[in-house]
Length: 498
Image 1 (cartoon, rainbow, N blue to C red):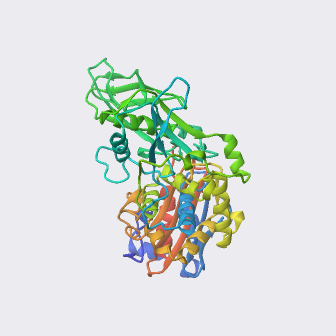
Image 2 (cartoon, rainbow, N blue to C red):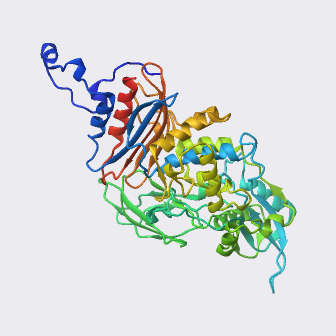
Image 3 (cartoon, helix red, strand yellow):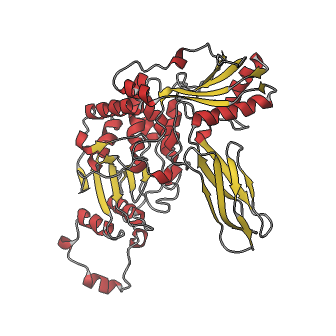
C-alpha cells in the first residue's frame, strides 16, 4: 500500500530549488493555477530523451480515466505481449491448474527400416512442453527418466531421433530482429524443447598471452581465438555462430585477474539438441549407440496445409506405444515463470498451444484474436504476431492493454493471473525498480523492453487506497538512453495525487 500521500521531488528525478520557506511562499503560484495531473505527468514525460514517443492510459476500477496520452495510438509492446498470451491461455486451455499430461515428451523404440541398417532407433517425441530438463539435479520433468526407460528395454540402439513433428516447423517468430537469433532471448521454439533451448558458456583467464579456459557443452564445436591479457582493464569477449551452424567462435580479451565471464547461447534446432542430450544420457547408462543423431520436423508444405484446414495430426502422434511419458507441472506454474522473468521460449510455446489441434502460429494467432474481440477489446487496438513479444510487428494501444486488464479481472482465473505479475522492488523483472518509493511492494506489472521500446502494464493502489490500472509505452527511444526514469516518475506522481 502507498505509504505517503506525497513523493519528494528528488525521488522523481526533478530538481528542488534551494530557497527559504518565505521565498517559497512568496513565489508559490495561486492554488487555482496549479498544474493539473495531466499537465504534471506530461511535464515529467517531457524530461525523457528527446524523440521518445509516449502512450499512457490510467483508469480506476470503474473505468474512469485518470490520465490519458495517445491512448489510441499503437506501440510496440515488447514483452507486455505476454499478458495477452497468458490471459488467452487461461481462457482457452483446459485444466491450467492440473499437471500437464498433454504436453510432456515421450520416448519409444522403432525399427530402422532403411536399407542396410538393422536394429532399433530410439525416438524422443515432443508434444509442446518447454520445461523438460537434463540438469543433474532435475527432480521433475526430467530427460533422465526417459533415458532410464530406454536403458531398461534395450542395451543397444541405432539412431537417436528427436521428433518435433507434433508442430509445424516454425522456429522463429515473424518480425524477430536478426540480432536476437542465436541468443538466449531469441532461441528457437519447437514441439520438442530441452533446457530452455539454451547452452551455458563460461570463460576463465589462462596464462597471459594464452587462450582462456572455456567450458561449453560438447554440442557445439569451439574455435577459441580469445587471449588472456595482463591484469587490469575490462573483459571484452564476443561469441559468434552462424545460424544453424555448429561451431562457436570466441574472440576478444580477458584480463588475467578477471572473474569468470559467462553467456547463454540459443539453440537453432531444439529437436536435434534434445536427441544429442539423450544420446549422452544413454551412453552414460551403458546403452550402445551405433548410429547417428537425427531430427524430424514437419515440413513447410504440411504447415501450409494445416493453415488451410487440412488434418493437422502428424504420423508420429499415432506411432508406437511409448516406453515412458513425462508429465510436466501445471501450465499455471509456467504462467508465473513467463510473467515473472519474461521467459520468451515458454511464452511462445504456450502461444502455440492456443492453435488447438494444428499447433501452428497462424491458428494460435487467429484463436487469440477471436477471444480478445469477444472480450470487447477493439481489434484496431492490437496486432499480435507472436506470444513472447519478440516480434517487431506487434502493436498494442494503451487502451487495448487496459481493456485486457479489466476483462481479466472479471474472469474466474483473474486473481491467479494478476498474482503471476512481478511486484515492484521485490521480484522478477521489477526487482530493481521503484525500490525505496511508495510503489515498492505495491505496483504489480509486466515489463517490456525491445529495440528502442520500453513498456509497463499493470496495477497499483494510489495514495488514497484507490485501485488503478495503467498501461504506459515508450517508443523511438534514442540509442544508449533510457525512458524508464521518466516512466517510473510519472506513475509515482499519479499514485501520489490520487
